[in-house]
Image 1 (cartoon, rainbow, N blue to C red):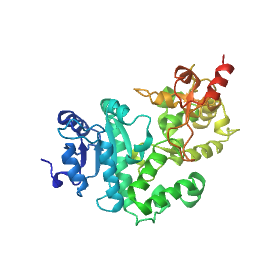
Image 2: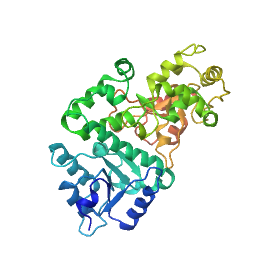
Image 3: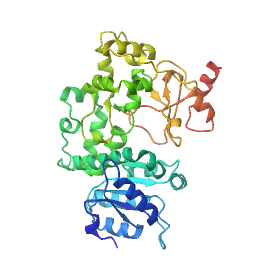
Image 4: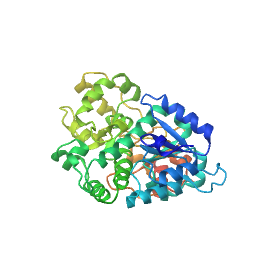
Length: 372
């Protein structure tokens, strides 16, 4: 029987399948940054978490009915935890949804109501291929909570939080994000942490990840891999170094645009420059021969700037660049804040998924006619 002393200071995994849970615990224990995980069945996990146990965080399965007499879900337990954290009845810590795709589709798919309960969402089936990435994300969420808890309630220091000066806070951030973080932090740490992770660290917007950085630079992925040290050196001046930077490498979007305009050979803004010209300018400025990104047939255009949301939702996910001029806008199931990039599908992938109601029908029809 797991008791509080077993849980405090470790990650707690709430799951109804002991053997399966043990295999994931062992896998994460062998990651490049090992996680120490304790497993609890739903009834024991509920008792521990709702009576004040203090894990570093919780990995929460969605479907918990495999335990005899258990009729609840991980969603319900997560809601109970958040309510008690809000009232100050139990400690604050991250909750990561950790489940297979089938129970997620059954209990959650299409309904964003539970999104705010979880700081991150991980598909169990992908652990074998992406274990170290998931470990960084889990530890990144823990780091965000620890960082936010270090501030007095409602008194965030943005220079310390983002590790940039006042000028860059003004130029690279969005006042709406700052307001949301300050407001959330006055109410509960998990409210601020959720906004920080789900609308800042995670999705492209104020920050971009490595795939999107390379895409916006107009560089072929294989060429970028070969010359990554040189590219990283160029991007070092706008690399994100603030709270949660270990979550995954990120770079400031506005910093990228300004760094581009500082190049002597750059004649127009990065977004309006064709990919082949981007690669030519960077090759000249960085002193290496960089191959230009070639857009795939299903995603026409020559000014890549976004990625295809539908491709990223596939299993396994695919990173497919999109030129917004030839992209189909997607209506998100939950409204995106203005500092998060709008989401698109490539026209080719959209035409293969015309039944997806999120697709903008006018974009779909217009582009289908234009490219016919």
